[in-house]
Amino acid sequence: MNRKAMFVTIIVLAAAIGVHAVPAEKYSAASIQKIRITDTDLPDGFTYGQIPDFAKKTLLANPWEMDRNAINKLTKNLYPDGDAGAVKNMHVSIMTKKEHPFGYDLVCYIIIYKDMSAAKKEIEKISNYNRFNSDRTILLTHENLAVFLITQDINNYKYIDEIKAKIEERINSL
Image (cartoon, rainbow, N blue to C red; front, side):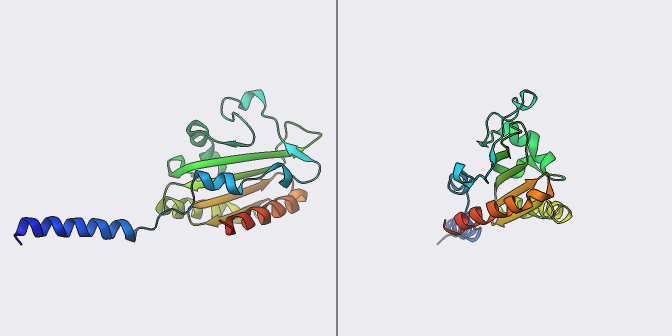
């Protein structure tokens, strides 16, 4: 075998091995639909919140799998130094007590990061934020997936804990 053919063979083999050595992302946009909050998951006395007029340019629906514009605007505000470029998909469910239709008493973000490298960096950031707000936030992570639950009132923490258990059960069944 001549040198040129051997060089090409080695490059092809290295590329093939490299592709298989990098773990594929387990979670995708399809995963969101399988694990997201459903109507039956809403705690008693809660409903999906209505989007106020000032926010309708960013949040087009509730619940909603966000478009790139919303991801770009909200990621940096969700947790310190949040990088929208690391996010492949994001879903939000905003829940409120029925008597306050424009409230946001409970919020669930499901985030799919674009790859494991991005996931590792961003999950570290969101984990730090969660640690400092653990009386009103819950973070659930699996590979390139993060589920971030937030309550404004610490008395509602039990509800996000119940939602976490339901979502975790769904994740484990994927």
